[in-house]
Image 1 (cartoon, helix red, strand yellow):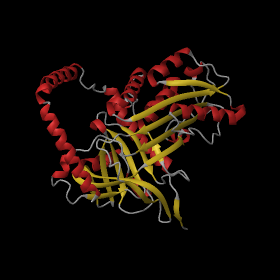
Image 2: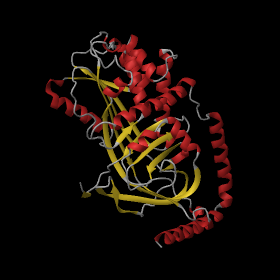
Image 3: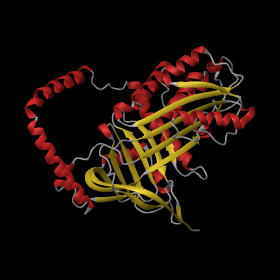
Image 4: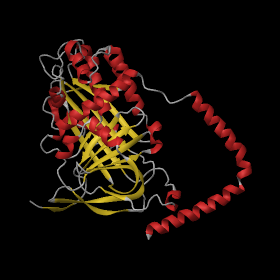
Length: 433
């Protein structure tokens, strides 16, 4: 009943708007024509920039690396929620390649399957990709990305490295003295708070290795839906984190036309919700029933994702999503070493002499810290769809249990984020053994 009343209100508002518009039609025609001409001229003068061949290659390969990285992070004990940005991981690796020599640098190319690229092509491609996907105006999302390289207090950064890393990867630099570990960690986390407008209270924790270089990526991401969720249809529900743990959450709802696929064989559903400007979308992968995500995660790969996306069809879907805010920090140093970055993380083998001019530095930590929020905000709802039969008998996507999600950029074909929601914030309702 509430929805019916809301729709009627929209229809009444739409009628009033139509009458006013007709009264102003004559005086508006000339202005509209001029605006259309101006917009057309601007579009033809500056068409959408096409990614270079090198940047496109690195977009694909950074996603492939991130799937492997995700699998390793998921196996960590006590890991709950996960957030990984493939593009930002690739830029951190680019920083290692920029500061490295010999095999320390070449292993970055191997990890990114970019052995055939020259050094300048690698850095230009990664810089271009990062700049393209992180433009919040083009994609109408909030995405703050800050990067900083910390070095021991004894280090002297070379002028060349400072300039190139700032230009290519927008990376800041700082020395840190871990003799007073508590003060050092406080300074690092205060930088993270400031860099993300307070969204990330802790970018680094449990730092064991304090004698080498530390790369920290601090990010805040908030999507703006192409069609908003109903602001007044947010209510208290439960999230079944496991068969024994139930958490109280706020859930938001809307029914609309979405790309949807039910994988009967693998007992899961896939839903794609476009973001504003339709240049990117959030793809949700959720098992049909409450279960640990391990089974679904084993399926996850670039090839499998492409298969799911190819099978999707536009359908009416009644969507219910938890209104979330989560913060996650992963130390990727060990995982990157296991995937092939063996020299940079080794005190003896590392050659990062482009950073300091001396072969006395290794990569001790790579903290990948993210805060992600999504709420009801988005573009106004198109009321005309409610007057058609398109929304009859909708499918149900009720995300009240753990799921995976990926933010897919449609222009560059890259993955901006991949992660999982296992335990949202909220009061514990039931916790049984």
